[in-house]
Length: 63
Image 1 (cartoon, one colour):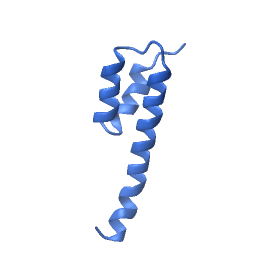
Image 2: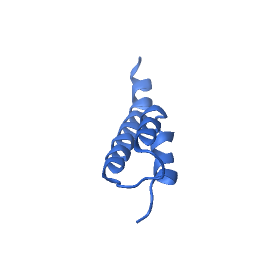
Image 3: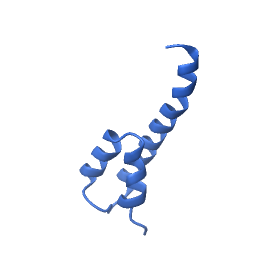
Image 4: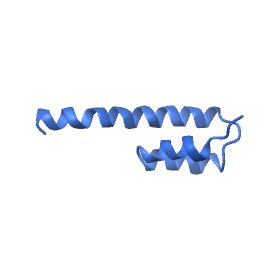
């Protein structure tokens, strides 16, 4: 990989990891998400950037 490619991919990678960690922490703290926690954990981890966004839009209940 050349330097230009790394500079283009690095922000996306950081965003993906930050979203995944934030969504997983929120899922652990959330006592009652929309659906089973194991399902949301799999979606968050396996669907990269889309998974955490789906969790925050659909899976998270407002208290």
